[in-house]
Picture (cartoon, one colour):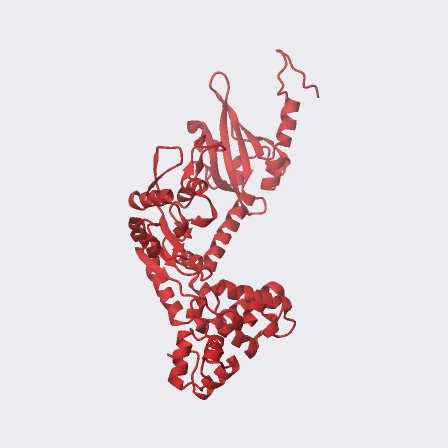
Length: 468
């Protein structure tokens, strides 16, 4: 084929046009002025199942398009509105495959006229959207699974403290009030934020998470509010921030106690005006979002120290939720341990049934400064070492096994030599246990007995862990 051309030679000669149509990934077919199919490229055969011999000479009604101009394909070309409109632009619809299956497609069509304005035919292009629909379904499934992760039953526990959290989540989910979740690291604050979002009317919209302590002020400002091209070195294009990204949904600001005074002022404006300005831009943009924040700091203490704005503090804590530490909900340790073992059995293929009584006693005695996250990590550590049906003491991390060498920072440890070895009375022992947050090893150190002796005293005096 000679592709050289001059003023007398058109590059789109019939041979070249045929090769061009054959190489196009989209389906292409043409109709004459009577509405009969005159050409049919290989991609049309792949998409529809009809060969050129089966299609040429037929009308496009054979494809039974579901939507051309707001209705099903008409019975004849005279009724087709292509003559009135002149084109169909990027319309999603479906065609009927030869096998009878409906194929999702994107359809474009153009009316072809001669130089006198007379209609000579129609050219249509068809893009197969099957893969796109699969991706959409996968994205919807991923969103559904994300919602599953944040169901109420993903927050494990039955203690009074965690039941109070469940009640707070249910109440918060019915409104758009700004929420402040406070609690130590590892208690599950993000899980609570997700549960509020996925049980609210915004559940089908984005749930966007950003850790405020992970970025310096300049980057955090751009990340939250976006920026315009040229606003700073490296800003080579406009970029929307997380506030806009979360449009219609929820923005979760973790570790909000770490934000700088500048970000505090800008966040206060968002809460007051529900609008943002991108970095380097003066245009105000409205945002429809719910804001949930979390911190492991005492925000009120930061306010009294002048490190956090008082007006912002009260804007954030319209509806406060407190996540209890694991040492305040030790009734949940057994059920959490079973939950983590069940999950890790699925991941690893092991068949571990639980923890031995001795190992469980260690877990109950430990103070858990890292809270639920530390417990989960401890069980995962045990899974690496455990080769039997039950996790035992020496499968646990050494710092948990040696809990007697880890006194609470807030509780001064008294030397046994300074303590009386007189056997404590029942009420005295209960008071000691409460003061030590039911840490038997800590009580043992205070009164000069072994931890095993404390357990024996408790059993003899009929004192249980859930004593109140």
